[in-house]
Length: 171
Image (cartoon, one colour):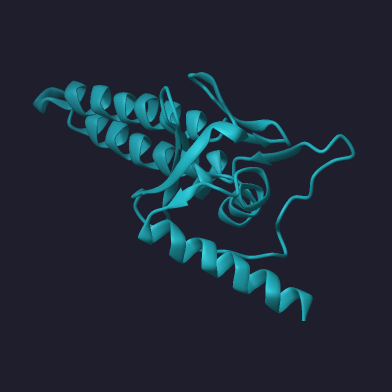
């Protein structure tokens, strides 16, 4: 988990903070393209010995991983005084700040995401690991917008790290 105050987006004049995705789709597509191209070349060289299968696998890899990378690059988190919205390729989900009852840790490989649990209804997973300034901005927003929310032990660690970062910047 990386929490840095230098790259944190600030709210605009309308009080809305937009956190765009940090995923580098171009780099991922280049890597996937090289892999798919390599499989296609090997398939073309061994055409008679099942090379068509390698060409098909190479193209499938390019399509599947390319779409996945493109989808990850389309995630946006929008924070304002009333609530939080998470936009993705699959739609938009929103949650009012005054309904947030608990904040939970969601394991996501190297960097965690956050699950916001409302008093009623479905919870909202905030992909803090995939947006610019994610953890720092979301936890600062939670401190002001949902001060009565309960944190589990792992999210409490992140919350403390954000507070310490803020105190160091003020000093």
